[in-house]
Image (cartoon, rainbow, N blue to C red):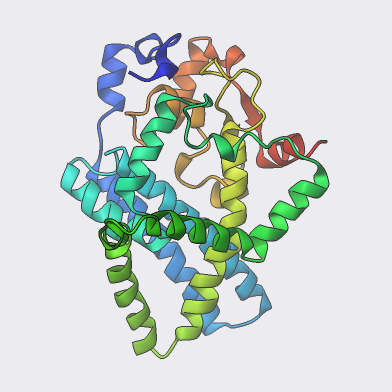
Length: 307
């Protein structure tokens, strides 16, 4: 059982009837999320391909970077077994169509992420390093964002992962194959498709560039919003944060309902598209006065770059 549930349990939030209803998964919603995400990506690519100019370029790297974050969120949903009704669809489609494009091995991600859920913001939380540096000075935040937009953050992250996998000689190639195998297969087909169309420029400008720039920025701010600079590390309603987002913020920093983060931690068996209803239920039952809720991602940035 998660240590998050030592003080508040899912049964304190949802009745058994609500739990049964809200935990139901939907293949239709799983397919919709995948089709929507890739549809927006290819739509932005097509816009730039047919009308290449500065505006469509900037729109492209912004929109595609946000949907790349969306793919990471979709694979997170699959890692919880909530994207589709069956385990096979979650594992196969979650890895091949959502995780691999983002250079993620879902099996490895799941191990770390489940520990994050169990030990949120404790010394045993493997993701604690993402949140402990904050708040920082405005200059420090500016440097971090500059590293995001110049590709430095991406290179450091990927180099760190590769160095960890390379590690000891024993089992080295098995580790690399296990982590990168499906990803190599995906990118072989993906790159070949662009090459056959004679549009490698689209692959580089409208896929690689957003991945190493705008996606890194959106990812950083989303990470900060979820667990940084929270008021009480032991209270599950205050060691995570829900951020109420406007339409632009939902498009960029918070695709696919990822901003309802307290709700996700308290009832991690509920699919992401049902989390707004969980939020309303929690407010109606009086939990709202104790929840760490922010109004917009601009407030998050100001809060964490205040020193």
